[in-house]
Length: 336
Image (cartoon, rainbow, N blue to C red; front, side, top):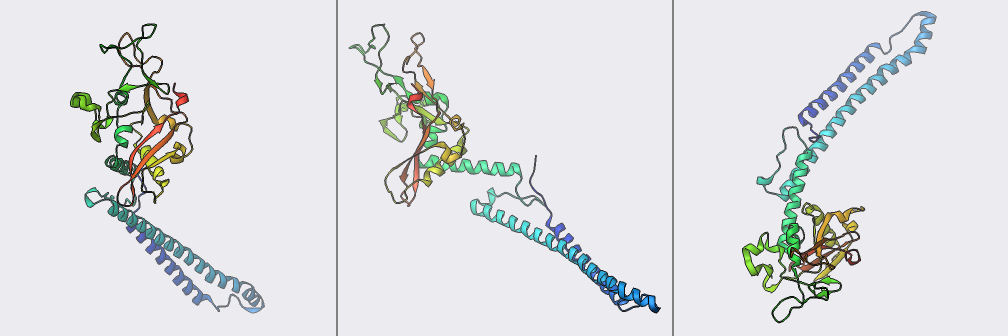
C-alpha cells in the first residue's frame, strides 16, 4: 500500500546544482576546443583546400552546436529539478497553511523527514476526524444525528412505541369477531403510544422511567414519531455530512423562517442504484401488530427503494442556518 510520495529537497537542490555545473563544463570545453581548432588548416595543397572547404564548416558547426546542445540539455535538467523542488516546497507550505488554519499545533500533522505530503493512511485518518468533527457540530445544532444516525435498531423500534386500541371500562382491549385485539389505525398504519426518544441515549427506560416518553428537547411534551422510525446506517456519518452539505446548498438565504428541503440521495451522493442501502428503519406490521402468543410487537423492516431525504433548517441567529433534523422518507406504497 502506498505510504505517500516522498522526496528530499536537499538532494534535488544538489542534483540541480550538479546539472548546472555540467552545463558550464561543456560550454567551457566547447569554447576551448573551438578556439584551438577554428581557422586551422585540415590539409595542404589542392586537395587539402578542397577538404578544408568541405569539412571545416561541418567540424566548426559540430563543435559549436553540439556543445551548446549538450549544455542546454544539462541546463534543462537543472531547471527541471529547480522547478520540481519549488513545486514541492510550495505544496508543503500550502499543506502547512491549511493545517494551521484548521487546527492548533496540538492537533497538527508533523511530516516526517523527506515526506512532502500526507500518506494514504494519514489522509484517511485526517478525513475521518474531520467528518466526525462536522457530525458532532450537527449534534449541537439539532437532533438529526441523535435520532437518525446514532440509535441502535432496538432504539429505533422503541421509538415506534406500543400499538394502541379501544378498551372497555376495565381497561382491557376490545376484540374483533375472531377474538383478536382491535387497534387504532391512521392512513393504514397502527397508532402507538409510549414512544421513547432515541435522543435520550441507550437504556433510556431503565434510566429515566416514564420520562423516557418525553421529548429530549422539551421534557414538558410527549415524544412524537410518524409511522416509520428511520435512520442512516450507523457507519454512514460521511453520507449524513454530505447530505447536509447538499441540503444547505438548496436553502434560500433570505428566508428567515423554517425551511423544509427535500431531495433525492443521488443529488447529494451522485449516481448510484444502491443508495437506499445506506438507510435502515422499521414500522409496526399493520396486519399483525402484536404476536398473540408472546405479546411481542411485530416490526417490519422498511423498504427504502425510491426513498427521498428531508432536511429541516432553522435560522441560527447569525445570518446562517442550523440543521434541526434530517432523515430518509420511504415510499408508503412499498411499505404496507
